[in-house]
Image: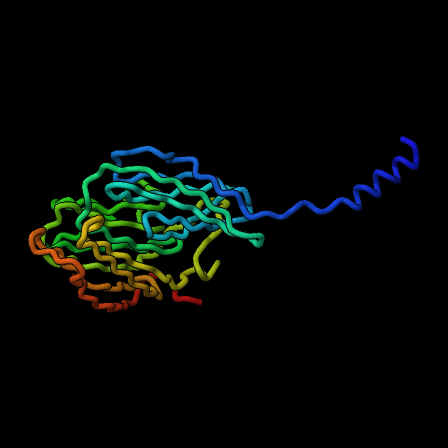
Length: 277
């Protein structure tokens, strides 16, 4: 190459505009549009920006902060009867990218669905639901004799691994009566090798944990009710009593009638874990 050609090439390279920055590209790889008979499905996809570690998933109006690792995400989602829409959004300094999928589910309607939502943590936060007969549905007993089920929406670990991320309780043909909703801070657990410890306080060993509970009663009917609560667990062994939600027989259900009796009570005990530092 002649010297003048080399100088021209260098000049053109220096004068070239920088690559345009862009919002992340989000792709939901599964499920795809169609129909299913499943109550719970696994949403999988990718985010083009490898620096992103969190994304927001919205399923039928309920939002979750989900982990993104090496540009991929996976999250379990509870489906409602009829049309379901799932959207995943991710943000970087250049904007927000998103993708959505809509599909149909032919599952039976649930009389009661309760979500426990919090940023995935390297320890256990547990949803407890005590049914009218006194039977508790929780991590050690994830199915009750009346049909109540506890779903792990985070990682589906076998042998009781539920607790490191969002959970949901569902029951169809629910027996009438009061359902007691509680959240317990059990602690324990570690991230896998090479993973980044999460939580609102980064690397602190026992951070406080903000959480949200959403209770959906008679979903998809004229009597549907939604109740949302936000609170904070401060240390292991804390138990927060959200309140009691009443299920009434089908013939007695009334549109707009408030079925929830909130208690919002925090019980603190001296736990085995270490305090916030």
